[in-house]
Length: 280
Figure 1 (cartoon, rainbow, N blue to C red):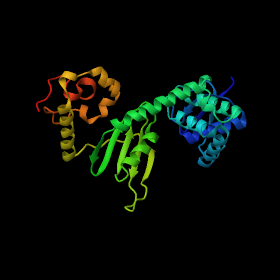
Figure 2 (cartoon, rainbow, N blue to C red; figure 1 turned 60 degrees about the vertical axis):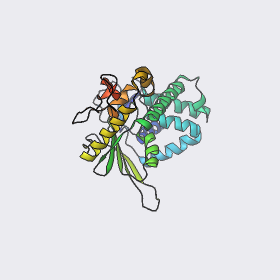
Figure 3 (cartoon, helix red, strand yellow; figure 1 turned 135 degrees about the vertical axis):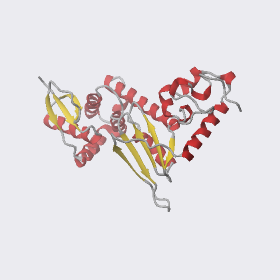
């Protein structure tokens, strides 16, 4: 049976090392699996160790051949939840090596089109989360949690590390078990330090009493601004998709309950969907 199953650590650097071996040894790849994936394969398996220096060299060489736009498409395409992602990215790389810079504009090619659509979905999801992420003060550290479809932390990192440059914060991606950590730089205006780690056992700590009081104030503010006569759930869902509601403070039930609380998730956001509007 022609082709191999490539197992690697699931990182972008590991994927670049796989691409290098595929082209160097001329062994086609029919399947890619992370190292901890228990699924068996009918193909012969190749285990590829991740070499950061090698990955950087491959990245620089591909950037020269594909152009920065083509390499950005490959880089962001790796962050998507696209089916058979690695094989599609290899097809884009192969086309770019044959045609040169500008491969990202060749939307007549099916693989380029599919990867481009997936990247637009990735960027759209990140744009939503720029406004929907909610942080809570947990012992002097701002902690937030999201459950995105794509690996959006690298895109969110740029936004939040700039906006919260003077804060210590942690943002957890429950879907991909990744944790973004940020620590502010020196007081003289130096840049902060950040890192994205694999964190499978991370648990968001509970907020303190003061934080819970502020969360309750925010829920009351959200409910008070609501206008019952202009309630339009379809319009709200178009601007604020339901899948983000579970992580938004204004839609969560406080532990103590109370009149100002709103149902968690789609059961009763804003105090209007399932009960009478709160008193002023």
